[in-house]
Structure formats: C-alpha cells, structure tokens
Amino acid sequence: MGNVNRATILTGRAVQLGDADNPPTPERIHQNWNRINSLDGAQVHEEANSAVLALIAPPAVDDEKETQSQGQGSVAAIFEEMPNTFKADAAAGVDVVFQFNISGEGGGDWQCLIKDSTCRVEAGIHEKPACTLKMAAADFLAMMEGSLPAMQAYTSGKLKIEGDIMKSQLIEKLFKFSF
Image (cartoon, rainbow, N blue to C red):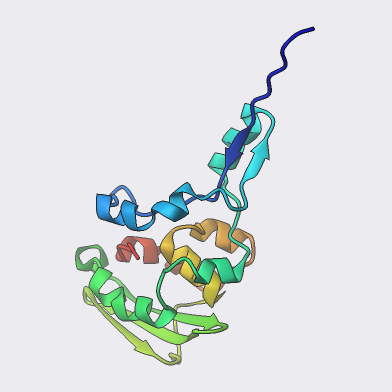
C-alpha cells in the first residue's frame, strides 16, 4: 500500500506582446489575457528537460483559422501603419526597397521604399526591389504579432526571401513592430 503522485508540465503557445524596446502595457496584457492563459494545443511534458526545450523553441502556429481569429488586424492595416513605426534615425545612409508578396485571404503586394531616413509604403509591385519577402497572410500576421519568430518562419519555409537576403535583416532594425 502506498501513495502515487504524478506531475506533468504543460506548455501552451508562446505569446509575444512586446520587445526589449517596447514592453507591453498592462492594458495590452489585459486585452490578450485569454491568449496568454490559453492551453489550447498545449504540449504535455513528462520531464522538465523537454518543457525547457519547448520554451526555448516554441512550436510554430500552423492553424490558419486560429491565427486569423487572434485579433491581429489585417495585412493591409499593418502596411498602412508601417510608416508610423519607422525608426528614421536607424535609416541614416540606407537606400533600399523591400517588396512584400502576401498570398491568401487579405493578402496583396506592397513595396516599402527607404531612402534618406524616410519611409514610403505603397501597394503594388516595384520594378527592382533589393529583396522580396513572400508569405501567406496568416503567417505574416502571426509574425507581425510576435507569435511566429521571423527566423522560425524562414527556416520552416513559411517565409521565402528572394534577392539580397542580408538586406532583409534591416527590417527589424528599421521598424518598431508592436501590432
């Protein structure tokens, strides 16, 4: 006769609401509390090591409907807001054109022109962009919202980059995303 105990660690999907330069406000945390607290799609870990690894490399968001229902807004709204998140001081001496081809519902083509510490975003296709970023709308929204890290999107094939791949790394330095 004796007692038997069992402990299990559950990890849900990662939710990123800010970054080191732009920490989330209490209001933003409150608005996203159901997502933060959700255990939908949680992984069960029988041992602490697998739980720690899951926290280091959270699973990608694969369910397109779930991604769209999380309230991130629309692709067009993100491109409309991009000039307002532009860091002009970080763009000194930068002359580059980024082309975005977003497929799927709500997608489209946008060009982002950076020159002389200014940013202009327009719908359409540019003749000679420095690099072209291609993604599905749901994955783009997840990446902008922070639940799909850019490197994970690229290595998993959800983000395809054509042209000068090194120029694409400027995007995170030139914009302060907090959607």
